Image (tube, rainbow, N blue to C red; front, side):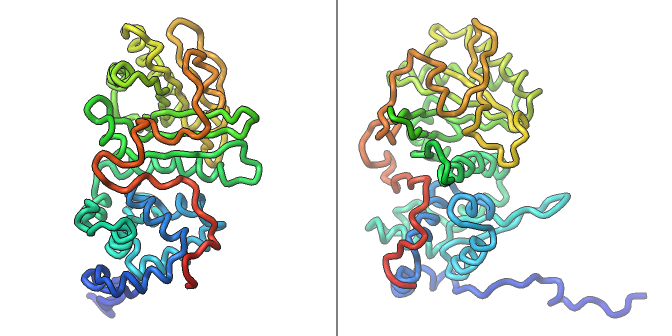
Length: 349
């Protein structure tokens, strides 16, 4: 017998009140919203446009002093429809909240750039659709790699900083006819010579056969030949055992290339160091040379010394294409990975 059934309203979680989707794109609302946003809020909107989805922890470590402080501001931005959110289901435990760009945030970005919303190539259903994508975990993992570098750059004892971070989508627009890296990064080291190191990231989840991973090197060799620019490729894998297998496949692929020096490769695994944050800038990267024994692990900033044939990068370098200031598709320029001063406001809140 069923007694005292649970009321239907009790089965629904609390949902903060929000304005309607229609009202979120009205010019009057966008104008009022612009007076409430800080430069950090606008930076976050651009980061979500560029990188599609960021978790609470990633946003907090990049731009806020604590998760609690981040949550308070994220709730307000959610209510204003600057950002939207979802929480994936986990078999065990609870997933963090995942954030994407919402209509009001996209409308604000478009108006700041003098564009119509439709010219921004933004659709709310597509933005939230990543919640059901089979690539969600991979995208979040890739973004976590770079959010950790951003957090490292903000530390008082930081020896360098992340200067550029391109998403997979932007890399595909530039290089997709040859290779499709998961991201591009550029690190500036705070040394007297102001050294810089750039790389393409291949974020490996262990779902591809090692020989298939190795076959990617042929595309990077073609890219280097076509552009005349040799860019190292960093492979981040989940376990040390997986790293051993991938390195074996990459070594075989390198020996089959006409000029292996066109494809500098280094690898690291998430479980190499007992590091709570999996710091990608730490001494964990092992360059790959098919002709020599495995060298010692290097810091991210030291990897350039592993390939002396690479020309030094200028500390002012920010663009791997050296193609000017516009995106080939006319979209927004990539945002700086480092957030602005949180006290910087265009107008009072």
